[in-house]
Amino acid sequence: MITRRDLFRAAGAAGLAAAGLASGQDGSTPQPSIARRKLGRMGFEASIYALGTAEIPGDAEAVRAFDLALDGGVNYVDTAPSYQRSRSERAIGQVAKRRRGEFFLATKTLERGAEGALREVRESLERLETEHVDLIQVHAVNDERTLRSVLGPRGAVKGLERAREEGLARHIGITGHTRAEVIAKAIDEYPFESILVPVSAADRHLGDFADEVVPKAVEKGIAVAGMKSLKGLEIHGGGDVESFVRYALSLPISVLTIGFRRIEDVEQDLLIARRFEPMDEGEMAALAETTRSWANADVLWWKRP
Image (cartoon, rainbow, N blue to C red; front, side, top):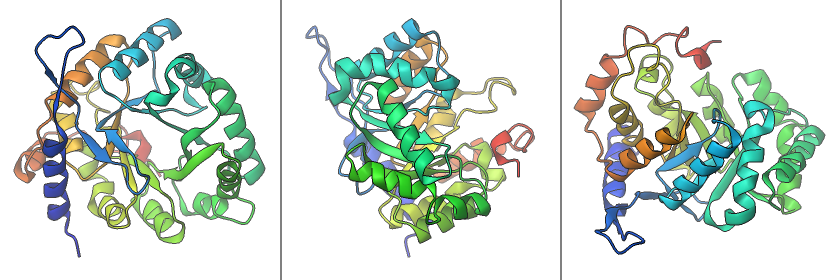
């Protein structure tokens, strides 16, 4: 049995081994590149920093930020039709029509039935201005009733399988925010190729997905995308952003989605990703302890039952 400690050590070693040097376009001194990790069994090596798009600035600035991220070595972009009422997908589409071959593209569906899920995939492709997405995820499966629905004979997963058969999507994943045991059951009952789950230092105190779900996924060869590593900091004094990103990336995840509200956030996150060094378990425990006073479901709203 692979232990959590073994997985942490493997993740750290992989992150350091993958970090290289990228030459400046103008022939200047090479800058550290962004480390890459295998995306489960999907045959893709993803930058550890993935661009999250739940919150983005105005379209023009968002497009500039997308281009900046790609130029900086990011090759994984995550979105959903529910983000800003599809504005996120449309902004990505402006970049995809020029640079689609440069990044792995993941989107989602909140539809629970097969027909609705397939229809939503097709609508997303129109906004994204691409013929396919690399990953389509059944989104926000936060309780067992929803899991039963999406896995049912007429559930969303059947629609996503049809999308894959038609070449509209290459891989199928699942996302969950609230109950780790639901995602654990999901990956036991269906061959999902990826999971997207919260991995913040504060989550450690409240149903942490890193306890069992992340190691289980890694053992099964399932890609693990992390999210919400910085949530709560804006309420509680900001905190050291880099430390919270390092905490998440020190877990055995494939990629960490980090959102942005302005182009300067992408500049900061590129710098953090380039100089990433894994934390040891003592550092991780100490950082998690600083969140104990506010690590509750009022702040970590995604953990509300």
